[in-house]
Amino acid sequence: MILGLGAPALAVDLPGHGRSAWREDGDYGPKLNAETLRPVLREWAPNPRLVVGMSLGGLTAYLCSGSWASESSLVPVSVVVAGQAGL
Image (cartoon, rainbow, N blue to C red):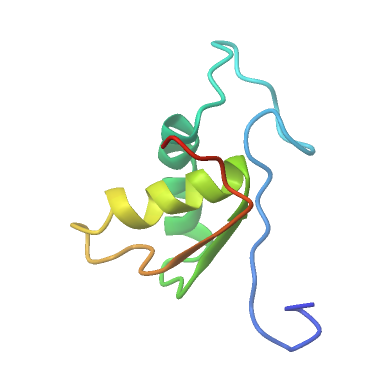
């Protein structure tokens, strides 16, 4: 839908999902996912306005916006869709 609106967008497969490789350590938690996503965002979307994620991706997006706030707000806003409780 966003591409149909002509807005720039980047879709990322988190480790072990979609076409991405599996992790040797088996850690697919949101904290490590956020650390993994950080260089990808810096390279492909250095000034994102918004990061959206669903479930595990939502927790990852949340951590991206919160943990990087001290770094000039790499991700200023995140939207969590159907995220898990207990973060």
